[in-house]
Length: 445
View (spheres, rainbow, N blue to C red):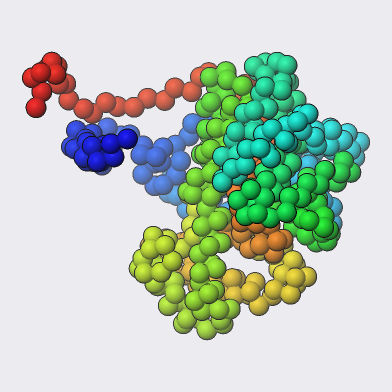
C-alpha cells in the first residue's frame, strides 16, 4: 500500500469534507444524538430498564441521585435481595427477559435451562478457540458468536420465541468462550500452560467463570458473590447506550441474533464504552505507582491537577471513572460496587488500597465539579476494575465479562423491539455539501 499517497490525499480531502460545528445548530441536528443540555435524544420506548440521572423541575434539568431500574425494580433492591446467593444474575436475566421476578420453581427451571447451554458444539473448542487464538478477546468474542450461526439448523428464524431460545443458548456459552479464549491466548502468546476446566451444571455463571478461569478452580463464597454482583450491575442500562442501540438497530433490519450480538460486542469494545474499565484501572495503577496509598490529600490533589492539565498518565486530561452521560450526582452501580469492594477488600487484606480509592474518588469529584461548574458523578468503571483485580481476573477479560453480563440486556431489547415496534430504524441526515459540475478525468487538476 502506498501510505504516503494515502496520507497526502487524506490531508487534502479535509478541505472538501469539512462540516463546521455551526451547521449543526443552524439545522438543529443533534450532534452525537445529544440535546443542547447533554441529554440523549429519545429514539424509542422501553419497559425493560430505566436510567435516572436527572429530573426536570419547572422545565429545567435538575441534578439528582442516580437510580437504575430493571422492569420497575431498583437495582439496589435486587442486589440486596439475593442475600448470600450466587444466582442473582440468573434471576435478573429472568426478570429482564420475561418482565417479572420468578418464584422458586421458575427460577430453578430457568437455572437448569441456562446450565443446559454450558457446552460448546463438537470440536468447537479445538477449531475456533485453540487453533485460532486472538490478541484481543473482544474480537474473538465477535468471531465466535458469529461462528455459532453455522451450528444452528435455522439461524435466520427471527420469531421472538426462537430468538429467546437462541439468545439463552449464546448466554450460556459466553463464559466458556471467554475463559477458553483467554487460556488459548495466554498459551499461544505468553507460552503459559494451557488449562481447560469444563463447567459444572450446578454452578451459577459467576461461579463457573471463576472455576474455569483459575488453574486450581478454587474460589470463596465472597468472591462468587462479588462477581455475581458485577454481572448484575452490568446486565442492562436502558435502550440508549451505544451497544444496545447498535444491537436493536441491527435487529430492526431482520438480521439474525448472532449478527446483532456480534455488532453489540464490537460497539462495547470501544474505549468510550465498555473498554473504559481498563482505562480507569490503568490510570489508577499509574497514580498508585506515583504516590502510593497515601492519605495526604495535597498529594492526591496534585496528581489530579496534573491529570486534568494533561501532564500525567495518557495526557488526555480525563480522570477516568469520573463523569457520566446520564448520571449527575451519583451512579447507582458504582455505589453498589463500592460497598461490595469494601467487603472483598477486608477478606483480601486490601483495605488500605480501598480507602485510598475512596478518598481519591471524593477529591476528584470535588475538583472536577469546581473546574466544570457542574456536579460530577462517579461511574461504574471506577470500582469495577478494582473488583476484578481483587478477584485475580486478568485485565484482558474485563470488557469481555462486561459483554457476558450485558448480553441479556441486548437480547431483551431485541425481543421487545420485534414485538412492539418492528420498523427498520432509519434516521436521517442533512446534506450540507454544494453541487459540483462533473469534469472528465482529463480536465481535472
